Image (cartoon, rainbow, N blue to C red; front, top):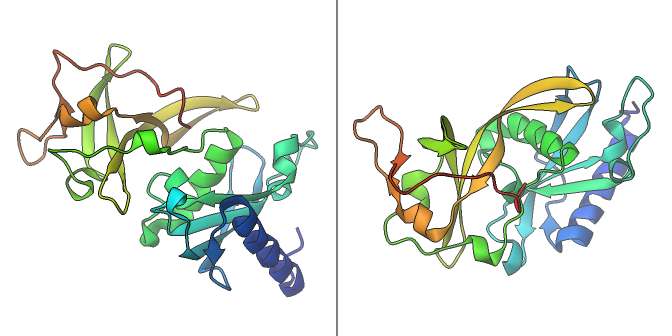
Length: 230
C-alpha cells in the first residue's frame, strides 16, 4: 500500500472530485481526518478520508460530512477477484451511515461506512422518508434505546434520526445483525436498519422508567425489515 505524501495528496484530490461529481457537494480543501480501517476477520484494509462539506444541495440535506476511499484498497489479500463496484472511487455521505454525525466517533463511523458499502446496505433517504411528527423531535429520539418486535421476536436497538431544514424527520431503528461475508460469519453492532412510517413514529412510547427503553404499542405494532433502505 503506497502511503507516501504524494500518493496521499493524489487520493485526496480524487476523493474531492468524486464528492463533487457524485453529490454536487463542495468539500473542504483537506480532510478533517484520515482513518485506517481493518475489516478483520475479513482480509481487507485501507484508509478512509473524512471531509467536512462546505455546501450541500437541498436534496442531500442535512449531510455535513463525507467519507471517501478508493475501493481497490479494501482488497482480498488471498487474491480473490475484485467486484466491479470495488474498483471505483467511493464517496459516502454521513446521512447514509448511522452515528456518522458524531464527530467524537469518526473512526467507528468510517468503519461502518465501509462495511455498509461492501454489503450494499448504505442507507438511502428519499423525500418520502421524512415526516412531520406531532409527538417527537430529533432531540427526543436520536440515539435512544428502543425495544421492538421483529418477526415475532423481541429485539433491542437504537433510534437514528435525521432532520431536514424544513423540520421534518426521518426515523430508523438500528440494530445488531449476524451476517455471512466471504464464508465468514460476522456480528457487527448497529449495521442493519428499519425505517419507520409516520403512523409508526407516532406509536412510539416513552420509557416507563428512567432506565427503560422506548417501545411501541404491542397490540398494534410489529416491524418487518426495510427492503428499500440499506
